[in-house]
Length: 229
Length: 283
Image 1 (cartoon, helix red, strand yellow):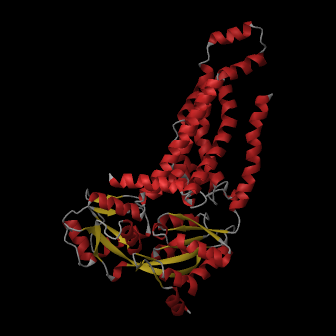
Image 2 (image 1 turned 180 degrees about the vertical axis):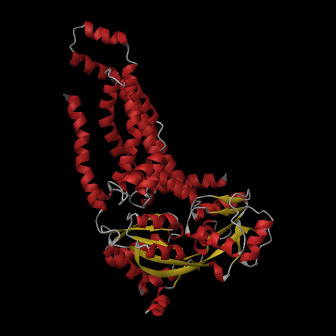
Image 3 (image 1 turned 90 degrees about the vertical axis):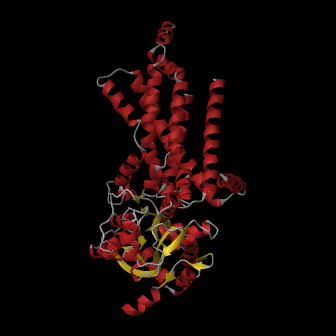
């Protein structure tokens, strides 16, 4: 028990003293998750919205595929992305292996189905009466589309938060595609894995605290956003 | 319309960030794949800034087992390797994947275990020790991961005339790095084989008094040779061969060899540089 407590105090000290290694891992995590979240939201929200909003042939099986992909294991994505990005793979020429954008690609694959799936669900669960009300107020198709988007904002936001949670906390992709390279691709989670392996708990605990803090801040800001709109 | 412009903003940011990101990471750097011991002990943390100071090249490394490191070299994903499995390295070079192999330093493997030493292997030869571990079904933690250490362990079981205890309940294969395997051994109160450098690091983590002690050491079969190999530019045209070559010259040079010699924890050297003697013998 004492090592946990000691680790905790050392962790506070590491954070307070601005330890470069600790902050490098934090910075990399924030950077890579911002990239992947931006990509997956920009692609996922419109795609997910269309998936929920329009009816088309093969919609059901497509939904099932998306829902299955929501459970993609991160180590499998890591393996897949590694196979594509390795110098001898199809995209080897871009030199993306062991880089931050490389990890971001993997994390986008992780987050995209979640954003799409949960956005689609939010749209599908929209109250049918609302649709009729909007139409009866004389809205045209474009206005109906936009107001539907507005009405589902909370569901979409919830999907984004779930996706963000997975992206922030995954280890498999960061480890396999990023290679856990110090100062470059060492993220909070790979650093925790490494430091625990080395039996040095302080930095692991410090980084764990930061991860929790970030998650807390995200959720608080989402809650505030909800209240204001 | 506001919504539209909000969506465009991240796209712009991305467009600005991505190319610069890739360009920045392609500066004058050297990417190395290495065994866990050179990383876990802190040796590379200690050498990298000095290499950068001497040559202006930034060293980036990913620490895996030797087996995976060789695979990364074969796939042209790194420029240089620092590994410790001489036989696998020779095959790697024969296959045309690597070039400019130079031996840089040695340490030795040791068998460590709990102080009460249930299997009574302390001070025995490596063959006898392995025989006793097997006979007494003492918990033995193996890397089980194709690393240089694991290759050595397999070789030692063979030379002791014993089958590899792959499915025995007392034989635990972690598939993890050296330090984490030592942690597992400590948790399970078992034995394991480690390179001395990583053991000293472990010892110093415990302030010099760890629960696992060295029980078998000094056997000639336990010698552990580390080498650097540049990835062959004929096999991988895009590889940073010039930087790799500069690293090979630097690490085998007087200055770096002295640095390795001075790298100590608890006052004990972790690696013994031996590039110089090899140079004399091959020229």
